[in-house]
Image 1 (cartoon, rainbow, N blue to C red):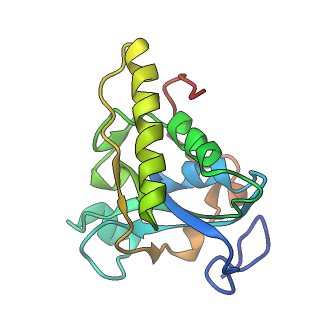
Image 2 (image 1 turned 135 degrees about the horizontal axis):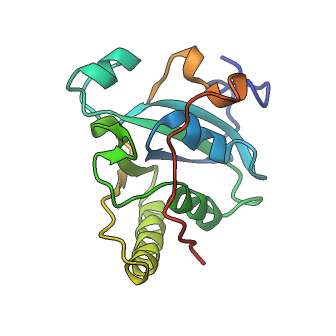
Length: 183
């Protein structure tokens, strides 16, 4: 399957020297758009992660109790972009205090998550969460509900979801941040 914006495979022949991280921050269409054009991002894809059902469909994730989250997998070159820069985009692109929702999108599939591939990335994600929590408190927001853990699974979403907002520039995107910035 080719990335609609980058015209490279989203799931095959990924260079071994790249790092990966998986984010859930609401509807995956808008979240993916936040990352695919950043310098140092090799490729992005959308999928389902964190749940109990193997190879779920979009309908399964939306209408059955799979416990999966709509997520974006980001492959990046740490020599070109640092994880802190990627985490900044993640925290600022959504409201991580909303629990099982983002705006009008409600359900476990819209919860805020960071799934890492190693313990060092977890430590860095937790540190950035603590820093952003302080900023949110100063601005009268509640506690961050973002789950941060090692990735346990990732299932590629259907082709029509991949880079959806590039294919449909006026498509729905309910993604909205808090207006707070992570320094």
